[in-house]
Length: 296
Image 1 (cartoon, helix red, strand yellow):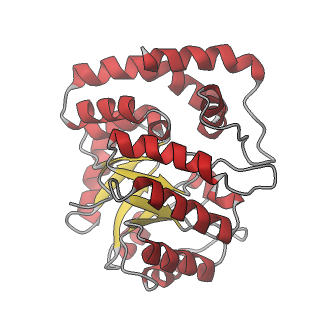
Image 2 (image 1 turned 30 degrees about the vertical axis):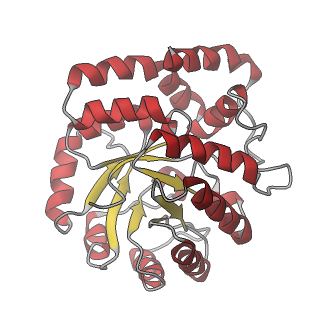
């Protein structure tokens, strides 16, 4: 069973005003996820603010998360970076530190070609034996993986999963079938975009890479389990409870919302990394109501 299957919970990375990770706060967040028993913990993804951290800060975050997880839940490390050598070095550190897998996005300033992205992945794949999940997140990287590149990357032995954005037409069944024809057997197909990921699971996706699970692991597990079991009524019941949160995510961005929620839940005092501004104060009552709906 791949460590990249199931519900992967992505916590924020609390940092101080200078951008240094707050290890005690990070540990507190990861302990909650390990106790809940999510399928994996994904640190240093977009929610974890990897792009705003130094390589040394990222190593500190991963080591803290691994220590807090204590081997109870596998930890997946985001290793995306502007330079391929930095990503490869982070991959080697992740393997040495005890991470169970890697998440790799093609960060860039200059737009990248398919060949450049393939060579980037190959260099990272050569750096360790850890399984790699392709992070297809065009809303942040402005790079979209086409079918030919996905098929080419799927031939690299350690590239074993893809984290897809939500399909614009919402047709998960057709997209998943197309990806299964394109990629090797047992290749893991997962999605991000929390509000529609339960629908993806109902249609046969293997994984939900979840922002919400980073703060509400028990509730997210209940929703994921219902969807993976094909329990449409149970999925709809949980989706109704999550709906106020999904509305905030879609309107204001999940990163701002979960940072504000973590503060309201007394898990950290950290603010989002600047220049990202905190969620507006006048939205606090709406966010509190969303939290109460999940805690009910």
